[in-house]
Length: 473
Image (cartoon, rainbow, N blue to C red; front, side, top):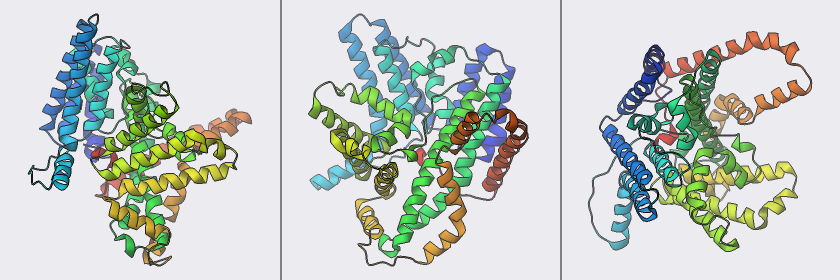
């Protein structure tokens, strides 16, 4: 089940909210847990048992680490077993086919293995579970002795299948006690509508354009069509994923939870390092705290720091998918982060800010080619078309059609990829216009949210195209 689904919007969510608010506080976690397991089972019932197995492994590992916290050897042993258990689950379902295929290619063997379907959201809930076990080992959090509470943490449906990756230490207190008032619930509804509009109105529209480009042989595209396709994909993945995060945060508020932000307008960044501090914040911070720092971070010398950065970013790419193109995509960004660390940032800071911004966009959109394409051959061929190295036209029929039909969507997408609302609020505050504009806002803002909701629902009714990109991770 997905959030941008009519069954979710008009049956599942209203029913869960009704059940949640009519029961006593002590039953609310149980109601949410049942709802979350049903939500996950909607698409693939058999994988609910995989999730329950994952919950059991981490629950037992946490108890044993807590029980033997004074015995360092046993404490490390149970941490290691907990991490290995999580990685084996993730590795088998996500990387087994990739490994077998590469062994067959490298050793000229013919090992046969049936294709293993990827359980939705396995990378997200596995990382959440590992963060709990690691934090218990570090004694950053207390052991969770209620299997209901830990199960809810790992399976909570608002952030289950595509994040944000919620740390246990940020939600432990909320699992015990949280509150919802009308103001917070309303804020959650507004945030959900914004995310839904991002997904349905913008991301799906950009997806149409990007798919048309990437489903065409690269040497059959014109130069302008190739650029339109990759810009469309860059905007699609941003509005798709940030929209999902907005919906997750909004849903969390409806049930009393406060999740941390996952995006902070990454396309306004002026360096690759800044971009990744703004994009998928929960994943970047997870790798920082649980991989980069344990590797030594920047504490073991200059060259070791650079190596650690390359390792972390290669693993980050591999986290996104079992493919050499994903690893190359991660290494690609790791190289630029290293270059910025060794001096490129100092050079960029001397340049005009729009040039810094253009540098970032250029690097990111080149990277998206490897992220979107299925193989290196298509990736490089697509790049050749973008940079006039294929014998293709500058403009073709595709360019004219999509420029004519989608120019308004591109304009809206580019505008709202920037913090325009934040800028307007700052202008209003600086000029003391709040009292003067408040009567206007109080009337118009509710209509804006209602219009976004109605448009989104109408588009869902009339369209079958509604993928979430990050579900496959």
